[in-house]
Image (cartoon, rainbow, N blue to C red; front, side, top):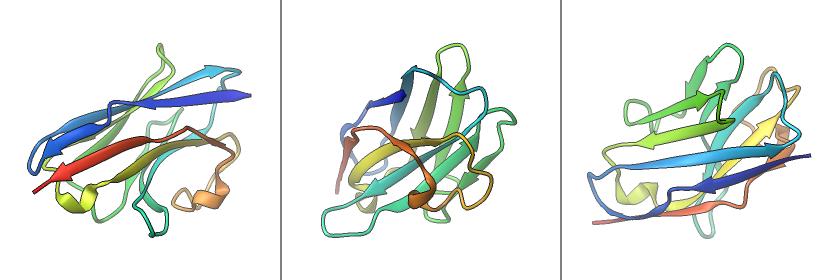
Length: 125
């Protein structure tokens, strides 16, 4: 099975930037969808961004569009989430997810088979 490990989280002031990484190891897929989700305490897990590995097509939640960028590095089997202009409302645990066969509903967390352990992002005001 594919293992996903997130890194890059931390504490940052409002307006600052962070870059999250999600490294895949083990049995990797030649074609799959990868997504970033986040969850604050007591709240539902929400979609942040997704990317189709082969085509590079990207999708974003309205709340982060224009501020966050998802990208991939095929050689490193890694997906990134560049987060700029961070706001306190972005504070959450960020999770990387992957699914081999997902075509649509990339925004639905229940469609993803593999998940990372999460990395904490805290934005202070």
